[in-house]
Image (cartoon, rainbow, N blue to C red; front, side):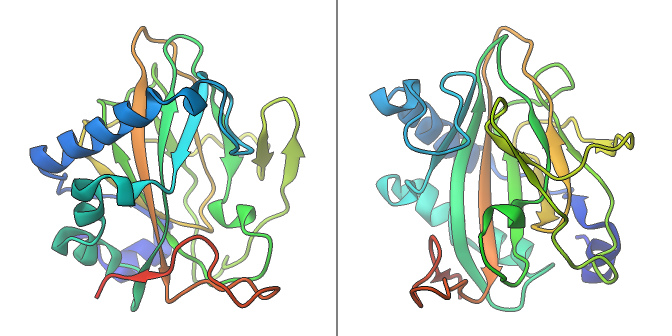
Length: 230
């Protein structure tokens, strides 16, 4: 298991232990069910959706008991303990890149999408298909979280429908991996994913956990979810 110190120095880690076959199939089943819904075809109401090219199908775990069980499982408690003391489910979504035209996703920090100051949270990215450079593998830029614990400036790209937080020449580490692999990274870690140029969709699942609830200061209510794992 990756240590807390190693994670802080790097900002991300590819975990040696993959999720089991039953959980993988449960996540794939839920992804396919959501893809088949009519709203998925036009992008729904998520600002970063690009229709069938790039879909973010989010906040639906309660409709799939096996997915909800997985999110609060012993395995996820173990994974989140690498970075968090008081893990709470913050958000979850399927990320699907359509075949051949599946859009890339620019360098960004997840925390840039939260419009107020907040504690960093943990993203657990899970490959639901074997992920390659050809179908949109994840890439991360190493970040020392002990010295770079801030959100960088981001700009909104109207064409890409995304925030862009880095436009330099450094390529980061591409992380092709087998289905069931988990990649964890901080909401402060810059990451991107490539386009899908293959004939099959590329599915992934993103579960995000905060260290205690993240509350919107304008309302006092939780941003997204605030469900404790303990």
